[in-house]
Length: 253
Ligand SMILES: [Fe+2]
Ligand SMILES: [Fe+2]
Image: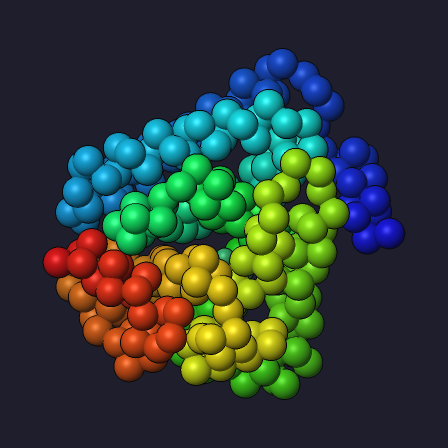
């Protein structure tokens, strides 16, 4: 089974339950959360919204770290690449803020988004320049991508299969993960789903994820952010993407 194989790999490669490692992992998670908080504060995100999202993330990180299999998965991200952790943390933080702005911020929804954010790129081992360039494309040539980089092409579905088999995983998380590279008007991958075929929570996550990848590729300056948001306008006023996109726009006004 893929999932068993993956867990066996983790057992072999990753940490033993050593209190020092556990402390170091938590420290890294808290440091990255602090860095993301500062970055978003610098670009003018409202303090009250930021503090509330930070509290949600702290609670969810604590929950993950008190659940053996989830803790192992999260540690695996840190062991591989801190940039994936930062990317996951930023997507998580902004998604929590958008949830609040849309008044969708129930505890189960906050938890689903956190799980999806932390584990969506669990199978990416190198967050290299090529992947970033691929993610920054507005329209994917799916056949080319499938052939040239099958591992990247399949990572949303594979990660979803893995997460779906885990105990303690809220429902819908696997679905959000499987569609995290889908985009409005069928421009994403792997399935090229249209806006009405992706659930509202998935569209929220995809909108924030796309925005974050763009910012990481092109920079977090206020002018760049305004350009990115403007470019998104042509596609994101579409079905389930519209409300999250509007909330994102207001966040940076
Ligand atoms: Fe990602
Ligand atoms: Fe991804």
